[in-house]
Length: 360
Image 1 (cartoon, one colour):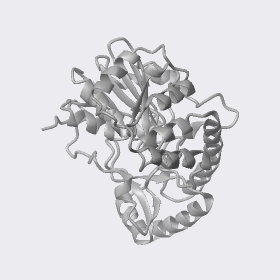
Image 2: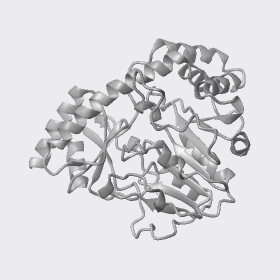
Image 3: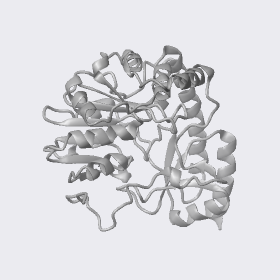
Image 4: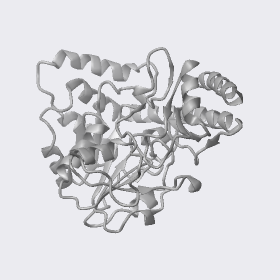
């Protein structure tokens, strides 16, 4: 049996770590529960994926994609491990680091890191961030003796983007620091120098492992492609826990395409559009009575607090809208909802529905 969480963070009501937004987004509902961008796939991405279908008789060769991703982040190829989505990366880390004595997961955040640790038999402690402080990271909340620390940046579901220096302060010899940057590409902007607060190019921090995903911005959740960045010797341990040919040939083609300079430039343009749509969503939500937007959102989703959120969510479903419940994230409760950023027209229609529900 997987070990239960330990320490003061263990709660009487244990959140359902296996619940994800796709369970909310049932057919017939407008999907504000899943943080995957829905847009036509550009030809520069669709064409190599389609072409790869002609090579399915051969076993996948990850070398070209690995080299392309390494070049994007200014690393040698041996510091890249391609995975079947970011979620597989968490599983590999949990299985490879069975000797970790004190794993700590900083919450609220994506639940798969802790779920993977528990499934691998780890006893997990939780460092809970304070909603009154906008869920900002306080390094003092992470125990000094933690030898495996997992945190998201920007964090799902809070949408908080922590300063890179604050995250980097958690790194130290004898500790593996895993930073989930699945939404980091959504924080970039045209003219900006890379992605604000990303540690993907840092090679000087001991034990740093950065987890990346290509499924969110490019709508590839069904293709399953992500990667880990970190010290070559550490990644070799994770690779040893990975099945052979874990990443398919079409997924490798997508990884190569998404690492190209044109793709990175496109990401920044998309992120700028996302920021404008997010600001519009935050402004509309902030105008509703009884609704509080958490922190300063920086990702493709917004976290809100409103009394009776569970009933609000059910009434939204009855009116055709799916949003993500918050009580399955450790550190949150039944009065939290996560809302994906969509175009302004969709946002305005959603706000009209939500306003009527709250008035009633």
